[in-house]
Amino acid sequence: MNAAALALAERIVARADRAHPADDLLRSELKAQRGLSRDQAREASRAVFACFRWRGWLDLQSPLREQLQQGLALAGRFHRHPASFSDAELMARALPPWVFDEMEVTAPLARALQAEPILWLRARPGQGPALAAKLKGASVWGQGPLADILKYTGSEDLFRTREFHAGEFELQDITSQAVGLACGAAPGQTWWDVCAGEGGKTLHLSDLMANRGLIWASDRAAWRLQRLKRRAARARVFNYRAVEWDGGERLPTRTLFDGVLVDAPCSGIGTWHRNPHARWTTTAQDVRELSQLQRTLLARCAKAVKPGGKLIYAVCTLTRAETAQVADRFERECVNFEPLPVPHPLQPGTGEAAPRHQLLPQDFGGNGMFIAAWRRKA
Ligand SMILES: C[S@@+](CC[C@H](N)C(=O)[O-])C[C@H]1O[C@@H](n2cnc3c(N)ncnc32)[C@H](O)[C@@H]1O
Image (cartoon, rainbow, N blue to C red; front, top):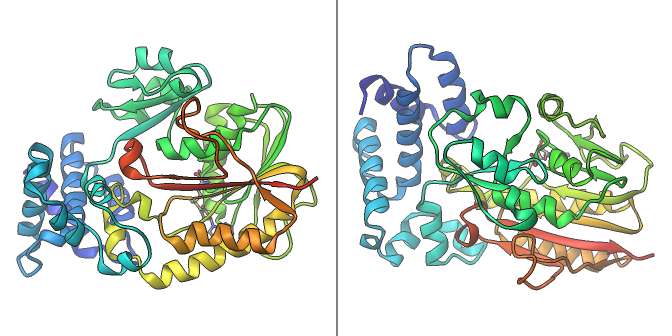
């Protein structure tokens, strides 16, 4: 491994902790390091992620440099000979022990969490095949409306491509795209994207609405909404209004919406292949606190759904407390809503319509995601 890349990786692993997530440190260090080539930057990132992904196997008493090398060697072995790791070994070492009390952990899940994540793109409506023809390394994933989901295996810096700057695609995980599809937003409707963050789902909803109608995009983090605005400008998305809202009792608007999407903050266990450092900083206490916040957000935002309108709840995690238990509680307490069966967003022709879908990392090679849908009774 290149010495400069190794030194950078070592610095990041040494500093990473709960308050300083490894991916944030990597982003800011790589921005500041002007002397590093793209290949060296990629090497440093791979080493940092491998180190946290394979942490359960490392000799933590050895110097960090050695741990980084051990992580890379394990990642290489897993890539070449996945069967050389037994199911039992993967289940015991890939996840922290507290997780077993919170959710079902299976061998396919543990295997999926050890694999390097796939990069997914979302092309603009109907443009998937044309984009795949232009972007080397991109291939269409599905058929019909799912042909706008692209898998990227190329090595270009996508943020520098002409197509990116022209707003021809967004980087968006396949199961995040599934959330937008499950909403089934239509042109001319009004939607509220409650936890809009940097706007991944807002932009998707706008595309599904053909840029017509209105989306309220709220988040408690003003800086995230600023990024949403930049992304929306690049994508030429205009039918949205961004507002700060921290989940408080007073809603940001009295509008009653055709649809409300609560893409809630969560423990993110479904993203642990992409963000392996979080495995070692997230706690069972986080799950408790987040599930409480999810219940509150859902109950408050439900009031903004118009009679006959939809309420969609999504989290990229797999714990019972943040998925089924939040949905069960909502159904017990908000009796003016009924479960709304929606087609499986990634298998619309074959999968059964259901009011709840759990997409696992091993199913599609994307993040784990839980989606629940309700309709407000007329
Ligand atoms: C899962 S992320 C949203 C991702 C976003 N929907 C997207 O597709 O890009 C959850 C968001 O919830 C926001 N959030 C956390 N606590 C909140 C609260 N109490 N009220 C409103 N938003 C909150 C976070 O700032 C974060 O942007």
